[in-house]
Length: 467
Image: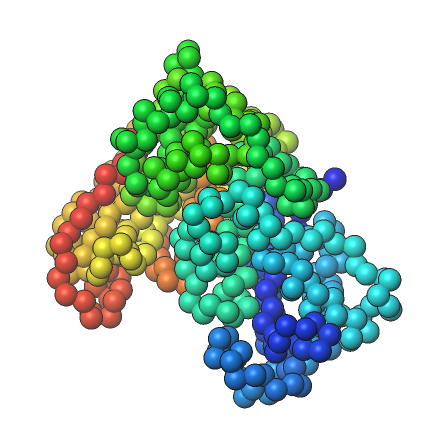
């Protein structure tokens, strides 16, 4: 059995000259590597198919005959793919995985990287399409574009291997969290059994539970946030997050999303529902993490491992091994070697275009590895409030009692969020700069974010502040 935390997931996407894996050829291949719920690397290459690419495929993918003319041949690229499959605990992941696997397998065979068809590489095959059909709301389509939109994953070049694989990797991480939390799945073998199992509904929740939930349906907003299910003794028994709380609750009632004994038990035992609204995906994820650790809900069993010393040590080791360029050693000395629990430096402001409010950007204030605040600001707005918040977050001396051990899981949440938006994000690190220089750098980043091509916009201030 391979624990999810020890699996080396290879999320792959291929573009091809047609639908037949024996007659057609791969033109574009990409792999995104996931370990312990984090993207840790990637591999991508065009491949010369030595075949004509039909015009309709050129139009769909943007890959032309001219582009692949100078690309490496399959006999150069595919040995690297085979090496990936041979690593310990490797798992193949793709959306509609049989299509991608058939092309990869036939290409490996054609290039004589297998002796024959019997000498197949033994590697678990995980299909995100099959999983999505079982755990995602029926109201959304299950293709890559729709799932990416549901999870707010930006795709710049749809039907290019890297972008589709990157999007698939990001929503696969979200699915892994759902599988572990809702269905208590902890191994690769359980994922495969779950995806291949015939879909059956459990018995519907009883009328008493349904009536209790319907009482809140009229009032819960269509906004992102977390839901707290509260039991008879006023204790929080389960916490769940969603980008649309109203839709999330409706899914529970209609038994669309809930097909696990655990979730049915939650719906039967809760007495009250409360919710906390949020302004962004990052805020939602961080708030859920903090509230779960504070309340230690009975049914969020996945998080019991936070109290396990070996588990925390493993998480630390993985954290150190998988640092990426966004956190390079010049700007981010993440772990104090004398005390592996403490952060030395993780202070920056992240800038992200806001698609919901035209001509605005979101500013995320990260201080000592914790998400401290968020603003939405027009790019021509008065910067005085930003300067005030920079001062409050980064330059007011904190009382000694506020000093805390680093929350590795919150750092992981922030890292994954940054990786997800790395193509459209800009970061401004505090480093050792003084307050005035840091503030001026932030102001310049805001001014230049849209190349000075936007008009004045109303100034918005977020409400997310943790004391």
